[in-house]
Length: 388
Image (tube, rainbow, N blue to C red; front, side, top):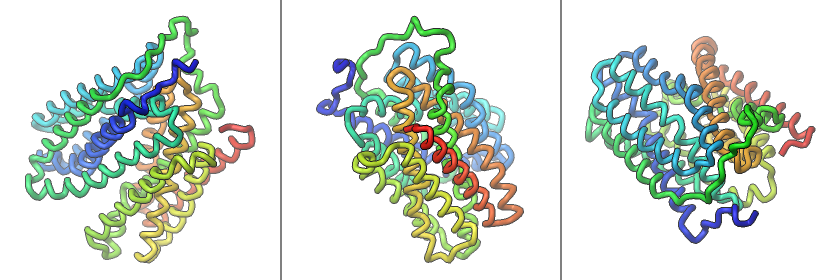
């Protein structure tokens, strides 16, 4: 019914959501590179740092499917997101005051539980609220990419000024900013909980071939970035590239992603979500196949522009496909299940990447190209049976 559709254009829904994405990805852009630095300053060795970081991956399959299904079953939208953001902020303070490996590991594992919920709940909320605005998601989500770059650069400045041992406090501040931004979001129209829903209906998404195709294909493409995420900077440094050049190459990739998000309204007008995932697979195949043969430095900026496809197109396609397949009643469930599968596949491919890089160097990218090619084959198969 028309009354069920959110009509929030004039109420600031989009800019409030953009502020939340900006805060969330500023946090990610600080936490990803500089949290391990802080752990090292606290005296943890490499193995201990690895175990602490792995805690976030271990808890995701435990908490996300349960919490997102509860959110959908009871018709919750903004509430769980706000709660997750504030609990993540509060529990991360305990991480900041942790002393010693065991205390930090326990505190971070607890903090990782609400952290794991924040992005799938935010994406589900945004896609539902922006449903009436064609292309709105991409134009809102791009601000997360902008602040991610800014945080990468700003974090380096803070590291010089504050020192590694104090880098935890900018993260605490960004957790608070994220929680405050979530609190300022507009409530979406209430949905009545599905009390008459049959037992086990929450798993019905996995009975859909289209849902499985989207989740598996997009996960394989996103996980194919494993060698790039884990080892590209080391490989470029070994080629003689300096730190500012390496940073600029990473920035080019994210800038290309931002450019795609900025024009996503036009793109979505003539491409279906599955088409975008297929483009992501194609971009990843070309990108990783070229990277496998150690291309000259002059080619790297051009290859980095393919991040717009390998990451950006895949992400846009997956988000819009999941929003459609999950519809109103299973939007959070679709996002949560997808985030879990991505985490699992990425963890597997990251582990494989380390072994392959050690054994064959840049040829490890060929395995990533194979991962993307399998995804492309899944997309072609899904198109044959008419999936969207």
